[in-house]
Amino acid sequence: MVSMEDVKAIYLFEKLSDQLLEKICPLTESRQFKEREVIFEEGNRAENFYMLKRGKLLLEVEVAKQIIISLGSIKSGYSFGWSALIPGSTHTSYAVCTEPCEVLITPGNMFLELLKEDHTSGYWFMNEVMKILKNRLDRRTGQFLKVMTKHPDIQKLLGL
Image (cartoon, rainbow, N blue to C red; front, side):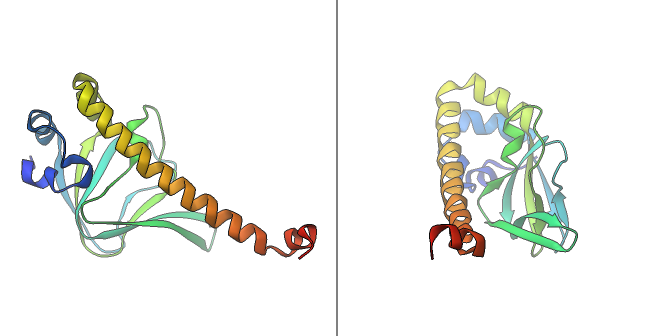
């Protein structure tokens, strides 16, 4: 079991009530990962929600046999594995440690049940998740459009 201090050190958990955190802690385990160790793989069932206590990792997608694209990095104090908050989902990327990491792991289905019980905290938490995901979507959309406008065929169509 992890301590309340461990969980409160995670950005999304710092404003949750102590009552809710007391219920989350017994469900959460701490696990050590080595550099280059994969925490989860693209396509696997998303069963756990993850919080990075220590270290750094990358979210990556393999687009071809020898082409891997990094979608972003996660640093200490932040969460990943959002797909576990949607029942029946699979991971859309790999999570790979770039250095030794300590990760807090909570079963997604149990965490969702706790958020349902505490509507106020559940709403706040999901609203914060939505803001983070919207920011990521906006950034990736901008990156995609920038790459597309550099494509020679698109430049011809645009008359550039």
